[in-house]
Image (cartoon, rainbow, N blue to C red; front, side, top):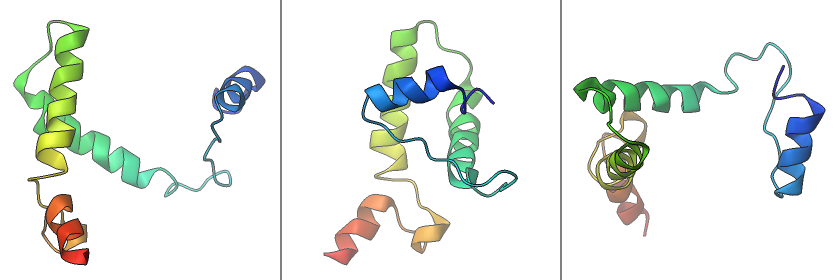
Length: 90
């Protein structure tokens, strides 16, 4: 329920953001994000913990921007990386 509380929604609104929530009980609403976090944890975090917050930020940035978006193949993109997929659409 924390995502429905007035304080949270006011913080979103003051930042120009809109909450993305579907109807109650829709278990598929957040499935793509949950799948991504599971992949990140399995593929990246399997190596252990970070020593500092800065190290974690750098590692996560490297994983997403260098590996996940440019090199890692995705079955939903016909087993291409997002970069390869986008290049083929031009």
